[in-house]
Image 1 (cartoon, rainbow, N blue to C red):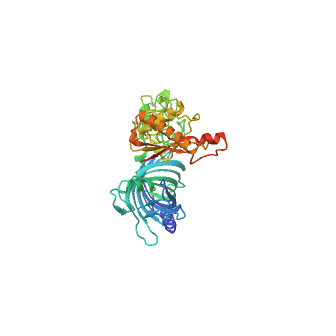
Image 2 (cartoon, rainbow, N blue to C red; image 1 turned 135 degrees about the vertical axis):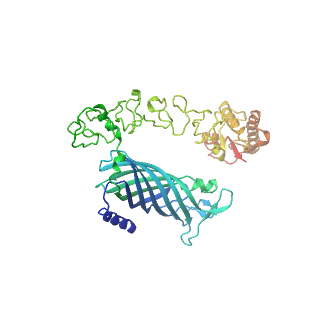
Image 3 (cartoon, rainbow, N blue to C red; image 1 turned 90 degrees about the horizontal axis):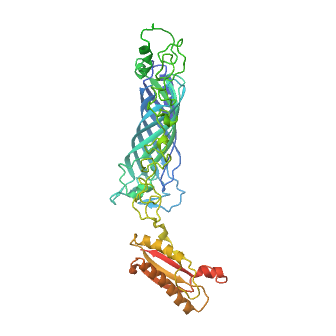
Length: 481
């Protein structure tokens, strides 16, 4: 933070040296940041410093290049259950990164305002490494070709920013902003398990003081010229001189709209034109021909709102709030070719079987095979036939097994303790074999299924009640590879 204070003092002193209008700026500041988005490490929030050089491109646009350095430490109190290469998720670790980025930033309101909001997009290069703080050696992890490689990279990133700009004088400004950087993965040659587990998002909040300087002649280049339409409309009128508060080329004594936003096209009375009646003046409207059917639902740039970014404006979209990234039909509704509930475009398995359970990515959900399937069949005494409800469950299971060929099954039959042990073992074998025969008849290969009669064993409930005995009379299907 001492370096930040030195920059602040330097900038304040420079404000008495440079003169003229601002075309360029230099600044510095600091804030807090943290890494996130992964499921392996846990980092604390740490302080960060930043230095910035900027160039004013237009009245409400600028481009800036900034330099930052980060140093994060891992939480060593985390549960040590995850292992990647030489790393355990509570290993003492220091993540050191140098960030060089470029951002295009836009003012949301007129540049004449002392208080303004900003948004920006950009990218850059993040040079980082993960080291053991005790020995300063870089940790190693498996690479994308199964080799051992340093846990380090020079990785491009994308970023977005939002901020609050305070400009107390023409030469000094304070910018309070938040930004998010996403590590793209280019240049990070790690195996997929490492990439899935590592943190890919850098979140930060920074306060920055900047000094503005430049040529007084440059400012004329920023002014949008449509306001000169007044001269074309009334070329024969005598030229007047006097104050023009809003810079629309209509003198205040003739201007009926003295607070016209800078850059708006005005009429002969100095009031903004709005050809499409969307509330955004011509000259500031990026979509000047917006249909009246939009009903005024436009963004700050005068373009129709598209809430789900599917290419259909909300007023034309039959499904205006789709999940972002879904493929849509001709009326803006999501397509789902295989009917699994996961839209095309977000479905990693777009041709899965109809009726087969899938995970959130649209692929067959194999989690059901991680535990036994319990079938409580209401057998009559001595009976071994399968009831219709259980048959339907087995049909759905068979449909899945015909698609997942490497799964094998043990069908285990169990009874309560009523009767003799020998009799119970015999009836449990018949019941297990009946389930096995039914699944084979439905198309499962015989060599994939084994049947066992376990008799009166492995009780899961008390045999002292009718309900408990009913639970003990069951079929358990165990899955394995």
